[in-house]
Length: 137
Image 1 (tube, rainbow, N blue to C red):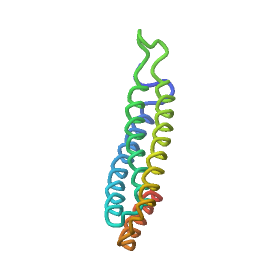
Image 2 (spheres, one colour):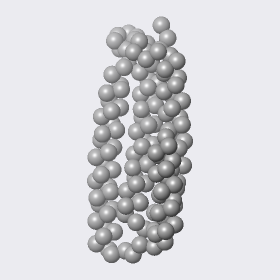
Image 3 (cartoon, rainbow, N blue to C red):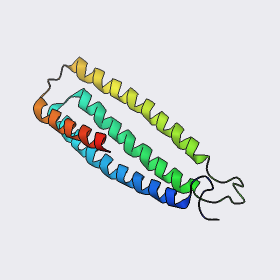
């Protein structure tokens, strides 16, 4: 039997394609957000860039989990590999917590240092473009 009993092969392929598109756009958005942070030095834009890093890591892990969960049951895992999806969800949650801690640390560090914001107009336009792409997806 080919594929997971819970996810038909056609749907599985569609999910893999969607994840590949998500990774590609995530990488482009990350590049834009990092450029906006570089221009402005804004902790808010940095936190948005960190969210993109988390998104890319989570989608990468979910893609690997999807590939693994599609494997049929074998002698080692007689009920199949579908439970990896639960681990994937937990991994994403852990990444979000880690990102939150990093964002708080960076924001407090920038705030205490009193670093001035620069070129806010350009940074805002880049971030707005990334938000529009995100909304379109």
